[in-house]
Image: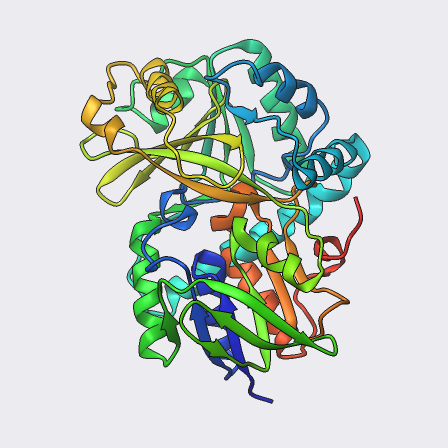
Length: 415
């Protein structure tokens, strides 16, 4: 049965969901508070990452977070505050950061990443698009033996999961990246990963969806959601009232503000990430993570992007120049002769990534609302998991058997 579906949120998750709902023959409307040209989906590292199968909530992260709390240049920063939602999330994060829970999460995260990578490749092969997509793998570059050993331990776990992983010497990395002038001891190379240019893909997808009849409402803020007998009956924006058979909540870091209106408690904290674009030749051709600095480097269409930090400090888009400088310093430290200019630093931008406490997204229906499907909480893997999430949501709404088991992503799960 074809349905009228409203998607709240026009980022990569919302657009991907619209794409697959269209394939199922549904009528789709997307509402977004922006003009479909900004947000985390436009400033991320553009990675499709089966290699990133370890959730953020891993053993030792709480201790690291406390230690880094007093360091303004740290890659992971949690701003302490007396806020009930923040305190609940922190407690749930602590309970999730155990070895046994991480072990359970690894195959789940790997499977949804691989599904998403395959779906990106299918979209590319459809010939309806012309976006930048390359599968060149990912280099986990390290400067110290201690970090190299830790990364190789993860690499060996990846091999157990069926991924192609190699432990490369500096000389072997230089063969792959002869013009990058890397200042490293070596790198763990994952051949499973791919990368894209988000600012290339997003406008193209918006244009495609419009040609297929998707209705877009830009610069509209959802003010309220009315529920009648456990069903969303009306969506009220700052401009109009809308009705639909099904509603998809893909509003990223803003999702909890809306679920609260429905009496749903879905723990999410906004994790701010920064990016600097370098619009000149860098000699970098393969995506890399600068391990000690936790900075992601992506050769995109016409420029190289340096992205990093996870700053959990509430919903705000304030640019902290210290964080920007830290990313620039990492680039200079790992790539000899690469200096990011003041102009490039001044043009830095940021985006808010919706972080669940256990590192798994929320995908599915809550028992409290029959026609609401939740699709958020993807943290640093939002770009990577866009198509997989959209596909799963379309299967839920179309009442089909889902490609993956959804129980690990249940929005009602307890922590």
